[in-house]
Image 1 (cartoon, rainbow, N blue to C red):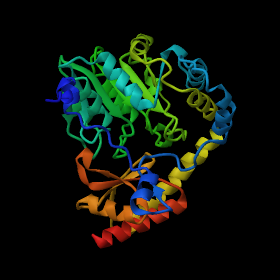
Image 2: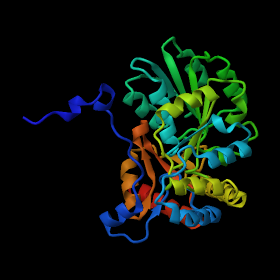
Image 3: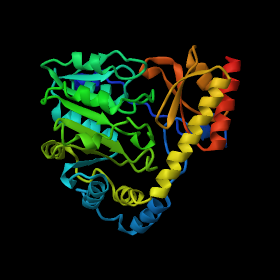
Image 4: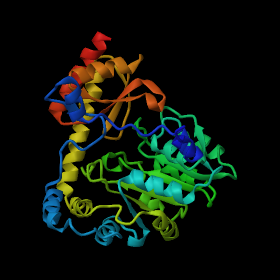
Length: 368
């Protein structure tokens, strides 16, 4: 009889359903024989690579026989100088997902409670389950975080609270007043992880900068990524900023060389490419306005978003619409795994991609 290797896994991992990323364009091309596929599924930057990042990558190719700087000294220094914190408050990761997992591995024991919201980023439940911690899911409020419900859910067993601002996949957001009022209620031995993956896209005056709150809340950890506005999704660079004692703990579980040489160079370079960031944010604002206008014109409801995506409520099973859009060469994101089976999330793309996506959506809805 062969060994049951699943049964040998830890309790949390045995029943874990792995993260399913957006379908790659080349996969759809293979499946359907298509040659012109538009992917608006994974909230990537449609501008492509920053020119400064590309030059930095090219300059680093000859050094790939050597290991990268495991500590990421230069990138940490640049982040600290740009955003106003100490370099030894930074933990670098292979994308911010890596950082979220580091936090869970470092701080969660079996039986510890983790609070996150309904419709929260799917990685929060994944890292909670993998560590055999106990999830505490609070009901959403208007597709976003109900901070009063989250505060009420805190117990003596609570160890981590995950909050995404803006939230993915809904695009909702919290004001500074709302967030600080919540943080004031959280015991100092409970970590609050503020996931700011989409912060660069937000222009609302009342939107908080989590980094500005670190001095007042030593139990706060702010995570950010280079995968969205900075256009480095394929290189995987993210980071956390926190109290130095927390950073010290995270460094104990972080694998050496977890950010590769080209990723470090590209991240350093794109931090200096303000023109690229401004173009990306401006393009996103224009694309968001296009989708909002077109969806409203055609009677399709959506969740107001401040990210680089918009989530459409089809009032029906979204999978047939998603499949029909695939057949038209357009990849968007079904979000049934977020308990939103009637919704599709659409990333904002280039103007011509947005128009093609909108037409494919209308065709699919008419067909369904």
